[in-house]
Image (cartoon, rainbow, N blue to C red):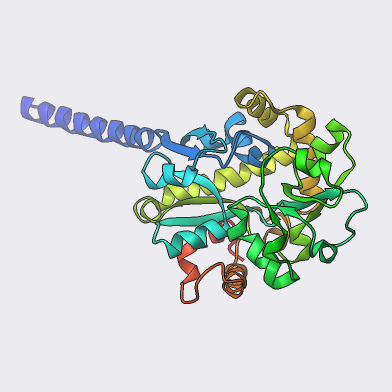
Length: 333
């Protein structure tokens, strides 16, 4: 073999080697973790268990995501954090997504973890057997709720603005008046009653037709357009996190308590029991293990109810509030 042939063979071998090295390097680059920032709707709790399970058990990492979860206190606004570009995903609820359409805010719900809203009306045991018995009763309702379930209660169940009373998070006013009613969460208030030895009960609004999704996974129109794969991977990983949380809550619970020292194992266990008892997560569109599922019919019906309650104006396109493509990837049928 002459020198020219030897050099040609060496060049060919070198080129093949470079191609091989490039082929090895590209997948490594493609698997580099993608940074994702998430803002909760409140302090870490069982209602956020899927996120913390996905973190604690490496589910986000398995999907190539490096997720940072931020707690937002009662004075915070996670939607503003997302719209300003500081967050990629936030927790939300149906009414806020539809209000975003009205206000031309580019927020979109891409999955619904809670099929049934945990909103309830707290009352003294024996005071009210049914929701209809509360007509005329004094009710402490927060300002945010006065633009969502309160108008619905008025139109659907005959309540009246004369019943409204100022709201705060304590039970002081509730305890002073045996007829007083106060808004609450079915996953939380009952635990506080037991802990403080209070004879109270809750009526779950979802049992009386309140059809809002809650703890939705919300993002921006821009992220859906520019990086739909990231959105899909995050939704899939978070849903897997919820399944892991219900299978074994211990890993997520440790992380929840580390982030929120006020939380206890007993409170987490109570909230999980309520989720299961009332079908908050796995019912409706999510029956049969389809956690996160949503439907056009449910969104449209809720919007129409809010229009009837004069909480939303007619003429909006409710389809701008949500995007089903990512849950359809999880559940094609």
